[in-house]
Length: 462
Image (cartoon, rainbow, N blue to C red):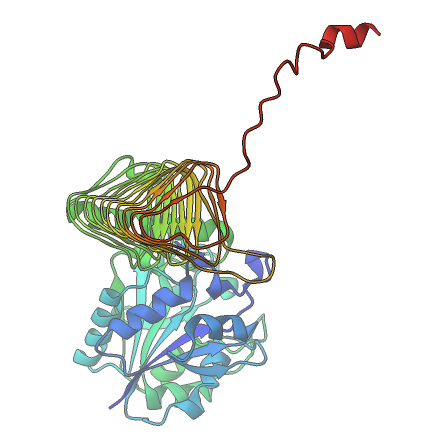
């Protein structure tokens, strides 16, 4: 029997007051729907994921690519209608379906598996995931009969004053026998204030049809929080971040002022790492043991080796090997690959370049589209001139090269091993092994030049 998950992501999210589809909004630089889909994929219970798209569907498809199956809800006719459009994609009527809103990024693998297992073990035809909250405003209320069994779910706008006082709410997560689901949906009407087909109506229908209905009560109510506006987005992000940081600290990562530190969902950090305030580490970044990161540092989709020190710097899509120091105010990007025991100092930018061991670029340098060996020293103001206004060109630098201050290497160019480039040179041709390259204008001293020149005060008096 096949187990499906249906993620509802077709809504416009008008309360966000922006053009972006609600489910595409990022938390810690990752779209919220990606959290749900990733957790569903981790689960061993889910065989296929179907995402219902509608408003700006291409945005969501670009995020999820071919990792899921898509169903399209052309008209926004309610949650019941959204699930109904998936019927043609579900071919195993003896299986089960989990239904989740696409705007609940805090739903984790633990919730998915526990709720699904309880549904199966108790042999329910329909299970509703509920929770209790201090402020139930905006949520559908759970109505129970005299014996405590689920009777119906009533939407807030349809509820009476006394029903609004109920603190047990519908999370919007359901597990339903496939056959029960679609048989019940065919009986749902739009006879309500919004003229929509409510998915919640299947509870009453299933009960009338003598199906076995139950609930799974979620203790951690924050996991059921839906994101309906930008404020709730920030609250969800804060909860997610607190949980992530807490887990890293339990695993041996020291965080100075952790409430100022942002760590992404997929980041891997080893023990004995120290992270200082105002640091952002996101994407699939890896931080190896003994590293010191921050303060005021951003690292995205990058690998940071053992005992690296990186402060006041930006590192994007790059690799920094062990015992290297980066910063302050350095910028590594677009595939920079920095070797072991390097020094990337203040106001140095490295782009699409690699270095060997013990290479130093201590200050005010730009290294772009360059392959550099070991034991190279870049003087202050060194620039690899890689762009002619139309094309980018490569620079090759060998081992044990000394590059003086204010040197321009105009690519394409090759500097071979053990060579030296004099300060102030602008090179346009290759430098052979062991050579000294000098390419600068000769100094001319004009003696007595100032003696015959009128002083500034004399000029003003004329």
